Amino acid sequence: WVLRAAAAAEAEVSGRAAVLRVGLLLGETGFVAAVRRRVESTKILPVPGFADARIEPLDAEDCARYCVEAATTARPLDDVYELGCGEMISGELFVRDLAGHLGLSRWTLPLPGALRRPVAAWLATPELPARWVDAYLLALPRFLPRRMNAWEHFDVEPIDLRTALARAAGMNFPRRRRRGGGDGDDESGGRFDWKRPEKRGILWTRTR
Image (cartoon, rainbow, N blue to C red; front, side):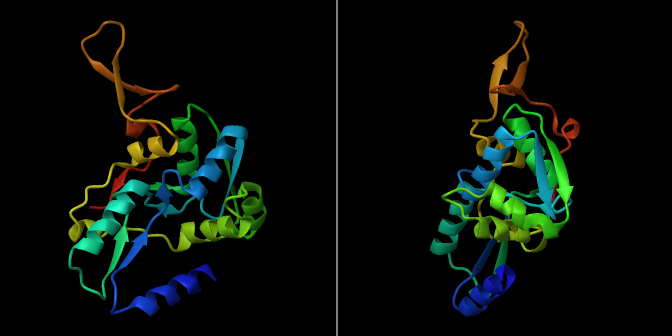
C-alpha cells in the first residue's frame, strides 16, 4: 500500500506541481530516532529486508532547503526530482555507522523482508506506530531514491553523509582539537574518534 499511495499522490499532482522524492531523512525524525533508541539499548540489531539496499540519505535541514527553493523558484511542473546527499550507504552499514557515531559497537542481523513486521513492532514508539515503521522498512530497499538528480536543477549543496550521520546521532561534527601538543589537527567528537571513510566501511559512492 505504501507504493500505491505514493504513486497515487504523484499522479494527483502531475502537471500541477513538481514532485520531490526524498531519501531516508537523517535528523530528529521519527524513524531514525526509533533506530537510534534501539542502537543505544541493544547489542544486536535486526535488519529485515534492507541490509544490502543502497540508500542515499538526506539531512532533514537540507530537505527543507530543497523545499524552500522549489517553492520560490520556477520549476517545470511535470518533473520529478530525486533528493539525496550525493553519497550512498547500505542499510546494514547505516545501522552500524549510526552506532559508531554514538561511540558504540553493534552487530547487525540481516533478516528476510518477511520478518519486517515483528521488527517494526519492536522499533515502534508512541510517536511512531508500528504500521509507520513497517512502511519505512518496506520502502528502504524498494522505493526511496537510489540516485540523486536534484543537483542538476537546484542551487543546494547538501551536507556530506558522515556529517549527516553525526547529526542524526546528536553530535556536532567535525570537532577539531589538538592532541599531544602537535601541530596537526585531529578530527574527533564525543566518545568516538573518527577514522577515515575508507577504513570505516561506509560505501561513500559519489552519485555525481
